[in-house]
Length: 113
Length: 112
Image (cartoon, rainbow over all chains, first blue to last red):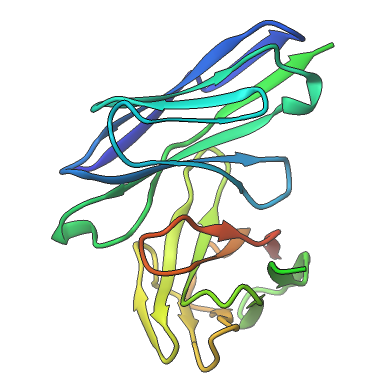
């Protein structure tokens, strides 16, 4: 069964303390992996798309990487405004999941000043 | 500004009433989606539409209905048959099926 697992569920960091969020996936072929940021009470905001192992994308303090089994969202020197829930979603390849995203449950990040 | 709008932001209904949630996009995207988000659960797909005048059931379509008569609009009706309708509803769109999805601000529905 296709599955996406994010860890940790919650993460507390001090401002400037770098860390990584993990997204592990089990799918029958990967067509794409997406990262989103969601603030409380709002819709998810698209961050990155990764398509193949070894690919990396960067945006400000965020860097997403992809291997054959997992993706990491690295946060360098975070600021309080980076506090949010980060969602990972996978688009499997194959007939049983034609184009439907599978979302993880998210990692809630809190950055304290 | 291009984007996705959902209205209203908050919606309250009595049990047994049908309610329609609005979703409009001016991004010229072909594909549109409806998700439901509950605390402690990932986003779950209700319905999706790859192109105007066509739509398909997602993973939790029971008690919901949609229409796609215009490219820019994809309204969701929550019927009285939906057993647990209180949730945060998110509409999304993508250029084409399988591309990255862009989300609207959401509608929080409370049914009492």
